[in-house]
Image (cartoon, rainbow, N blue to C red):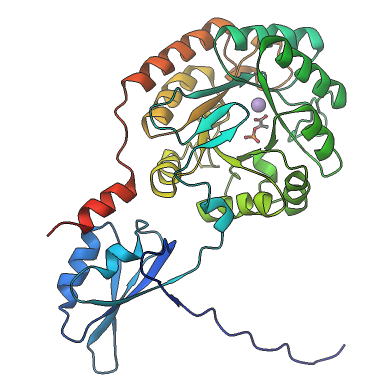
Length: 374
Ligand code: PEP
Ligand code: MN
């Protein structure tokens, strides 16, 4: 083996923020010689940032570093603060995802990022089991006024002995059931090999939780140029989730809808731990299309509606919910499936709730207001 050392790569330099540039993550605020570091720190904290003083060898505070998890803030708002000489930051690692932010994003007949718009309801069985069962489920979905029909043709199952899905024939049943009722189809691509077929028969390709960081699959789905619904990995950070979205978009996906479905937790009373904080972050801070799947989060049908209501209240654009015409006989996830009546009631309540919610203040408006204070 050659022992030639690898060339040293310089650490990425902090880039000075051009005035007015929507720099994604200001990281460092340099102070003017006469600045009062405490006053600047307080002003930054008032904008929702978490500053830490950086001292020179003489013990004088010359700059304040900003914790990456503090609120996003336009660098121009920081540069305008008294005592700030310069704002330094890093370029965003997910520019294509960032470009979806705060603008109307059309995906399969639904406009995301449209404050005040009706919520998107995605519903259907966990698995597509047979043509007849899917047809009955699609009737329920249409009767509830949902817009997208869901259902797994290829199923990621923990046990290799569990029902694995009906594959390609289920894709055809999905398409036919949706077309007959004016619905759109979202279904999961489980492998690189099946990605083109899934894209051909669906409107939106789902990336399942277990595959959020299956980079080969993300590339293959991106290459189909279909929009994607990207479920958050069981243990994924928000940044990893955004970067998975960047994989899809950098390989051709025109838009990504982020779906929070609960994280792995220590408690067994719910199937997963629904991270509504991340939903609020994606919607209000990042301004991205985001939906919530309360069915896989709760794993039990009695909690689906309460979690769905909470999801809308924190700003989700929509919900993905499992429903089955005969949950007792479902081949997967029966305990969390709603009946047709329950789905209709849920849809009715969600529309009423969405209509009653005041438009949320976006973080950027809040930052701009704070920065323009005398
Ligand atoms: C699904 O929605 O069909 C599914 C398998 O969900 P998840 O990937 O969130 O477990
Ligand atoms: Mn399921």
